[in-house]
Image (cartoon, helix red, strand yellow):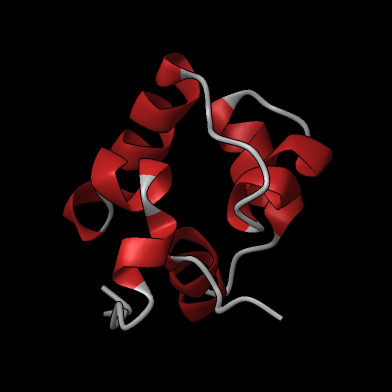
Length: 77
């Protein structure tokens, strides 16, 4: 089983559901699940919305290259 992506770690640390985050960035829960699982890359607009939603704790690099950040530490801020 692959390690959790930075996006998933951050969402869980902030106590958010996939549905909450997906709705906030304009995608469905299934789409967010695929991005979190590393099986799909987000569209540019979705990546920008996720980065804006989570602030400086998440970058587009985390979304497009999640395997490079397996040791990503999450701040609950």
